[in-house]
Length: 111
Length: 119
Image (cartoon, rainbow over all chains, first blue to last red; front, side, top):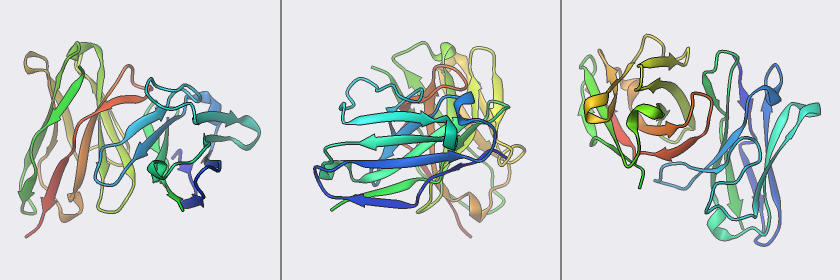
């Protein structure tokens, strides 16, 4: 089964830049688009990056996404960190049968 | 404004059946996919399955195939997630979410329905 692996947690100081990785278990992560979601405690997830590197309206340009084919991974980068960015972040893509898969989630602490 | 409004929290006993709902408004319900996502207490998101209300095309994650049934009613713009026999391990928050096509992002989410299964 296709899986996406994320680090369990990352932490960084306000104003700095953090990158969260999402590595595909097999095949090419570039075969299907990668989406990223932010989930704050007690809230429904919110899409922050779609189709690898597109930003929905209303999402600050401090959020960016990319794909690295050499490492079969996607990345979410947040620059100019703010305390409000503290949340869980999930990557999502699809397997070869077009069924969705989420990564395990990364807890971002801004300290 | 696109809205997905889910039914309220449920408390059930093991072995009971349950059907929770997700009502869409503010868009053409039959032109978008509706997916269901599970989040067990303190855990991550799990993609369960997705349905296209326009023709009822449905896809399930292998982990949930045979365990739940996803359906949709075009006349009321409502999608459903159904269990025939609940287990304690079904205790979780369940979200519905909208997608432009089956492999696209979820661009709008319901508020979640908390299902608690306990004897």
